[in-house]
Image (cartoon, rainbow, N blue to C red; front, side, top):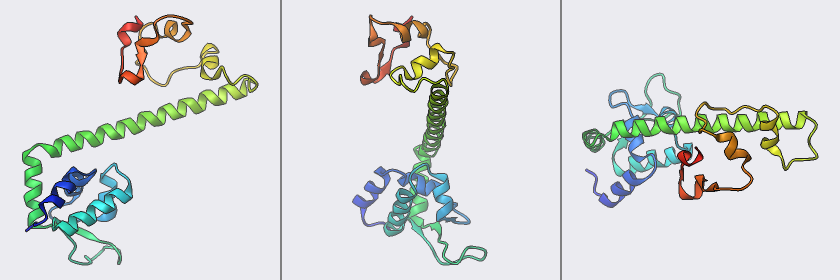
Length: 184
């Protein structure tokens, strides 16, 4: 039985804590490397959570299983781990965590597209023999026909981009919200 209730609260409050229990196969157990593949957190974070779960008595590793690599650790839920998993499911956290992980994957994909776009625009800029005027950057390439990576451009975005004076509050990342309607 888990006696470190404060440690348990910290575990569930920490990044990937709930995910570690959700990633474990309750019947066949799960290898550490497979837990890491299922959780969009750094491998070190996942390793820490697995170690914490084991120290708290939520997971255990009884030893090697036929077919596993000699140094592999296969983790199984303990009774306390199964009780915790039932609590997680009863709160619908399993579905929320799954949705959260999917959103993280979507964000990483979109960040990658943005980085690719910047790389493409930079290559166009440098290949257009404009290296002496880097202050123009992607604006220069937009004027030369550069394209955006997505389809959800706000209305009147060209006017917004090339506006020399006026209300630039319509795009205010420090406010935490981009008000595209003010761009119309």
